Structure formats: C-alpha cells, structure tokens
Amino acid sequence: MASLSPSWPEWLPLRTSLRPLTPYGAPQIPDVIRLNTNENPFEVPASVLAEMQKNLEKILPTLNRYPDRDAVQLRSDLACYINSRSKTAFTLDNIWAANGSNEILQTLMLACGEKGVLGFLPSYSVHPLIAQVTGTEFFNAARDEDFSVDVSQAIAVINERRPSMVFITTPNNPTGTSMPLGDIEQLAQAGAGVGALLVVDEAYAEFSSEASAVTLLGAYQNIVVVRTMSKAFAFAGARVGYLVARPEVIDAALITRLPYHLSSPTQALAIAALACAPALLAEVDFLIGERERVARELATLGLKPVPSSANFLIFSGFSMAPSELWAELKDRGVLIRDIGIPGYLRVSIGTAAENDAFLDAVNKSGASQRSS
Ligand SMILES: *Cc1c(COP(=O)(O)O)cnc(C)c1O
Image (tube, rainbow, N blue to C red; front, side, top):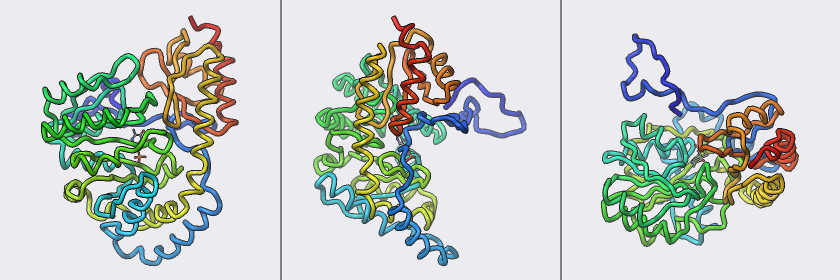
C-alpha cells in the first residue's frame, strides 16, 4: 500500500486523499518460487476441472444476458458449505458473494463506514487501504508484542472511538495468530454497545482449528463474517469471496454493490468448485502439516517462527535487516514477503519441494549463523 509519496502530475485531478498513495501490489516476478501471497500451491485437480468445464459450457451461450444479479444458486451452495462445516442453519438470505472478499470489504465500507472503522495492526494491509480509498476514517488499536489483542484495552478503544465497524482478522494476516471465540464475543458485545458491526475476516478459517465466528451469529446480530475461496479452495484466480451475516446486513451491501458485479462465468465456476469441495479441501491438511514442519525446521536453523493457524507463518531471529534477507532469498529464487514488521518476514506454505527450497535458501543465506 502507500509507500513513498509518489509524484502525481498536476493535470490529473486525483482526489487529494489519494495523492499520497501508489497502487497496491506484491511484486509478481517470473521464474521464482512464489511464497509471497498466501496462495494455495496446488493446481486445480482434473476432476474439478471437468466439473468446471461442464458448468461453463452451459452458461457460455447465454453470455448475451446479464448474470443472475442475486447469485441465487451460488449463495445457496455457500450456505450449505458453511452449514456443513459449522453445524449452522443459514440460507441464501444470510450469504452474499462478490469478486473476492476484497470487494466484500469495500462494499461494507461504502455501506457502513460513516463513523470510521477500527482495526488492530499489524493486520491485513488492505483494510486501511480500502478505508482510505472509500473516504472512511481508520482507527488503529495496536496489538501486544506477541501480536495478540488485549480485549479489555480493545473494548476501551471501541468505547472511546465509537466506530461504525470493528475489523478483526483471525487467523490474522500477516502474523498467523488467531483470536479465541470468547474474545470475539466480548468485542461483539462492545461493538453492539456503540452501534458497530464486528467484521470478522476469516480468509484462513479452513487452516485453523478454532471454531468459526459464524457460530456466534445467532447470539450477536452485529457479527459479520467475511470468507474467501482464494486460499483453502485454491481459487484465487477466480475471485470469489463471501459474507455470512444477518439478512439486514446483506440488504445493506446490496445498496452499494455494482449492478451485475459477479459475472456468469465466475458464478458457474464457483458452483462447480463448491460441488467438489472435498477434493479441493483435501490439500488443506497437507498444508497444515507442512506449516508445522517448516516451523520446526526454521527453529532448528536457530530462527524464531511464530505459531500460526494459517497457510503462512512469520519468523524472526535473523540479525540482518528483513529487506536484506528478503533480497538474498529472492536472488536464490525464492520470493517471500517483507510485511513491514521490524525483524520479521512472512513465508507462505507451498508444496513440499517449494518449502524445501525455501529452507535450503534460508540455510545458505547465512541468516541462522548471523542470528544473535
Ligand atoms: C488473502 C486475504 C483476503 C482475500 O482476498 P480475496 O479478495 O478474497 O482474494 C482477505 N482477507 C485477508 C486477511 C487475506 O489475507
């Protein structure tokens, strides 16, 4: 997100609030092992491809028509998926789908961001970025040294700032740490006290053993859970995210969405992917195992991985600057992420071979020898 102040030309009437910004984006470099954007490393299995092709073939001749504006089947299928995992009883009225959860977040901020949003940094850098581009004030309530959120302090900040939305990311990106369900309940209560929605970004839920906040929706009407098919479903290229909430929240989102925003091919592909959920989710357990292995081996190299509930982890314990180790690993053909936390770098969990290449590159970089 916003880095050095760029020099926008005078003739371009860019909004003043946007002039300090540069376009968002992690580097996309060819011919390296990409462990920098938390993608699922596995390609779509052949059985799933066949299902997708079948669904696509059905809708392609009807591309002259606008898509189903309300994505009825997709939302029903998403409700079934959530119900099967969390033993809930949602219907399509509790679900809304969009082009990635980033679009969900933007739609929510446009609809409900009037009194500002509160987040706990370091967290997903796109939250403050979307706040900025939608003219929504962003309040930061910092995390503790171990990246956890001090709940009583958080409640005090919520009462002081009285935002219209509070954002929690759990498991949190970039730290991989998760928030206990009991803490989420307390924040939901505090949010309700000041008329705020509690938006729980669960992009990595499938990699965590913690129960989903969707199980709290019956008790707390102000909880909004944001999910994505980008990570666990290995579906980042298709751009499908969704929201689980009370129907009133869905209706509010429908006010600020663009008409016909979710294309027919996207809906058809997502419906096919959900029909093949077991095949797509089969790799999640493997990635969890690899995450634990990478953490163990980093520790063996003398580095300090932070326990993670996601498909990535951050680590410290190297004496050189993060940017220096990042560049050295890139030169060795492994691209990870410098997430701007002093002393830390983040690595996404890849295939076994990719993880081995990462560990080998770390070993050869001298990071462990030079650690203090
Ligand atoms: C990756 C990620 C998303 C996903 O965004 P999509 O637009 O669905 O690809 C959302 N929230 C967090 C915290 C993430 O890390």
